[in-house]
Image (cartoon, rainbow, N blue to C red):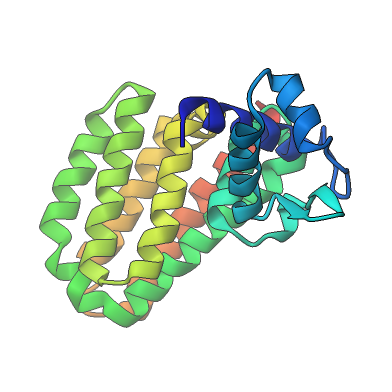
Length: 233
């Protein structure tokens, strides 16, 4: 897809995410959109096809192009894009961020309960990644280091579905400055969560339930602070 196609797709998608084009809205005809964006009809058709592939619109012969509700699509990629587009609307998307973080926390706790030996085998690498993360000072460097730590966790666990969730959260932090600031702006809280996570694993002595509870408490505290920071700016 050309750059123009993608720009048009992203422009329309952003208006949908932000509620400027509510669910049920009929978009102008392909020819009208081509005139609006000063491009050819095939260019608009490719952009609309991509929007339809993500579920943001439905395009049917004789029925036109109809906007769908992104909140109902159940797609992690769409939810991340919605958060990014609406970061200046925290009252609307704050609950979505909370859901993202809760899902991540639940999956981490599940991995500890079910795959603790594998995670303990990766503990040296996790500890090194944690040190680099705590030493980082710029938000972009912190986000990158946090993604590296997440990779250690999911690679050790060997669960591709969990990897997709962690990637979605890490990618969101890299692309949405407001989310990154909420996640990493309170360094004492962030560092406490990191130490709680690694410390609970290191002190587990094979007690998966005890480690899971310790990690759950550490991440829950961090998640609560993150959502509050996001919603209050």
